[in-house]
Length: 224
Ligand SMILES: *Cc1c(COP(=O)(O)O)cnc(C)c1O
Image 1 (tube, rainbow, N blue to C red):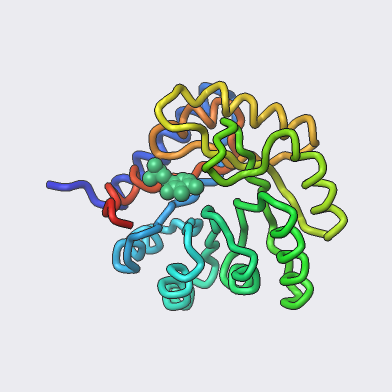
Image 2: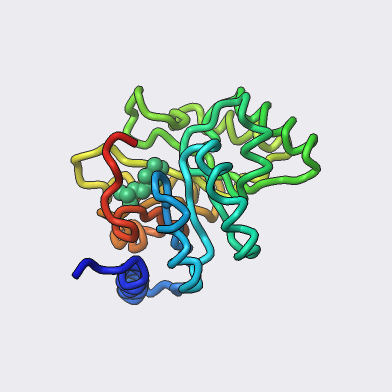
């Protein structure tokens, strides 16, 4: 029989607890973000019913379609944006999400600053760092980070940490360690790092937010 999403949630939480024990960290200092992109509301509901409240999506439009109804039933739910954000969708993102993990460029700092003013609401942000210096991926170049953080401060954007997606197919630990060090250097507490294949490692290296999709929901449809 296939495992249910709630069985998987229990397993992932046990892995998180184990990594925390090894690293001598408190499990409550690690937030599990259940990445529900591509999965329908019917797949998400069991996790909500099991008491999980923090989710992540990578597309504004998809979240707008799925979450209003789910939030009505579970109003204390937090939905994080973990995908790239176009500046022209900043207003929609501020209305829909409780945290944004993909702040990565000056134009988005401007757009979010304006969107916060307009909405009268501020959403905590992670600055995404292009930790593997891969041009095609989102994220701010490490060299540009100090100036981007300064611009975010000037625009009154609450930056709570750094986020990364390490290069595929290589050992991610050195990249997690590097992100943690850069966060330290800038006095930022939040580290959004670790996905299904590597979240225990990320926790041992200081992750405060792990973004786990496949290990909770199963494989995604590859077309999405
Ligand atoms: C999809 C996604 C995840 C989750 O990936 P899994 O390997 O399914 O756990 C995490 N972070 C980001 C930015 C994603 O887009």
